[in-house]
Amino acid sequence: MINNHRYCVIMCGGIGSRFWPYSRANRPKQFIDFLGTGRSLLQMSYDRILPIVSPENIIVVTNELYAPMVKEQLPELPDRNILLEPARRNTAPCVAWAAYHVASRDPEASMIVTPSDHLITREREFETSIARGFEFVESHDALLTLGISPTRPETGYGYIQVGEQVADGIRKVKTFTEKPDLELAKVFINSGEFFWNSGIFLWKASTIQNAFRALAPDIAAVFDSGKDVFGTPDENGFIAQSFPSCMSISIDFAIMEKAPNVYVEVVNFGWNDLGTWSALYDNSPKNRDGNVTQRCSVLSYNSSGNIFAVNGEKLIVVSGLKDYIVADAGDVLLVCPMAEEQRIKQMVTDAKIAYGDKYQ
Image (cartoon, rainbow, N blue to C red; front, top):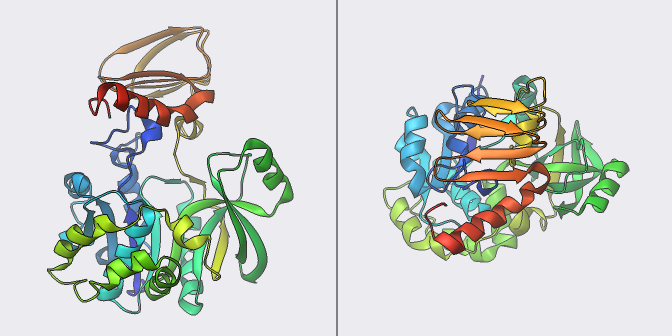
C-alpha cells in the first residue's frame, strides 16, 4: 500500500546542452524519446515513480517556458502539481521551493527528488531501493543521496566517499568530489570507497528546510519570507517576484557538501544519467559494425563505433568514419569525435557568440 505522506519532485528545467543540437532550449532532452520506446525521458521518469508515490503527490518543477510540453506529455498531472520557475537558478532554489510547497500541503511529508532525464533499466530494484531510502529518512534526521558503483574512471560525474554503515545498504558520507581528473578518478575506483553521485535524493521536507536555514540562509530567507503563501493562490505571484533573487547554485554545493547529516544508499538498478552522446551510444542497440542509428537511414562503409541521429528523411552515407557523433537537427549539423564530446557545451557557447540565439 502506498504511503500518502510520500512525495516525488521531478526536476525538469534543464537545457541538456551536452546533447546539442538535438537537445535545444525550446525542446530539451527530457522531452525527447531518445530510446525509441514511445515515451520521453520525462514520461519514463513519471512512469517509474508511480508504484512508489501516489499520482496526486508527484510534482514537476520546470521552467515556465516548458509548461506546454509538460502538460502535453503528462496530461494527467494537475496544474497545481506543476511548479513553474520564472528564472533558471540551478537545483538548490528548485529544491527549496519544492520543499516549502510540499511542506505546506503535508507537514509530515517525505520526498524523493529526481532528475527527469536519467535512464534506469532495473525498475523493480529501483522500487526496492527507494522504499528502503524512504524508510531511513522517515526514521532519521537524514539527507540521503543514492550512490552508484562506478564501472569506469568517469570524469564527468561527482563522486561520494563513504564511511561506516549505519543501516542495511546505507553509509555515512565522508566527502564529495565533483568531476575529478582522470588520474584521481582512477584512484577513486581502485580504492573501493567511492561511488558515483546519482543526483537522486530523499529526505523529509522539514529536514531539508532546516538544512537550508542552517547552510544556505540567503535562500531560506527568500522562502521563509513567504511561508504563509505556499499552497495558496498567492504562491505563484510570490515566486514570480522572489525566486529570481535566489543565488544560482546546485543543491550539492549549497547543502550536501556542507551538511553533517548526509548519508548514501548504495544502489544497483541500472542507472545512467544519459548526459552525453557516448552514454546514449552505450545504452542503444548497435549493428554488426558497432554503429548506432537513431531513427534514420545510414549506409556506412569501413565505419564503426559511430552514433547517427538525424531528423527527417535524409540518408546518411559515410566511409572511413570511426567513433564519431553525427547529429543533424535540421538547422544544425554536428560532426564531432566521440572522444571530444566534452567540448560540445563550449561549441554551444561559441555558436551563441557567433550567431546569437538562432541555434540555441
